[in-house]
Image (cartoon, rainbow, N blue to C red):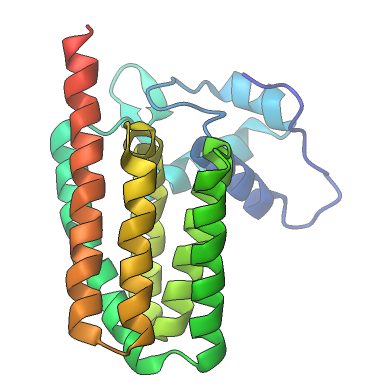
Length: 227
């Protein structure tokens, strides 16, 4: 495990900072899916008490980012194929609704922001940017989308879903040909959003998620084939 993530003990919100830091370590891949987590190792990594570590683990179990395995202890959640399929189906419905809501509710500057982020995504793909840069840009796209939808409940639900999707997104983005196709799909979505066509935006968003789901599903086949 990395050893250089010690926190500032003077911060009165140390518990919240630890939770955020552990969540980010999982989402950034520093703590990998399937990795077992010992309180001692996490104590050494973050430089906080074991009681705070236990508290953070409990919160991340509630977020489904950590799974407690009987007789073995906590580990970073590793989604199986069925869980991934279920997750993408729910995500498709929520993302489609968010795009429709964005058409109805977003301010002109939010439309411009979405177009600018989409253009930046396209540049990152053309430049063969790092996987981390792509994931961060995609997350920025969704932050803009859900802010413009002006539906806080959708945003809250999606945030938890998206944290779990990130565990799979690296799989889907790594599939050959997926990145250029992803940009085509997103550009099509943003184009119809610009036309305020809520029905088309919902339909294209659901198709985009379905394509990502297929790419992620194919990665499970690839893993099983090479075992």
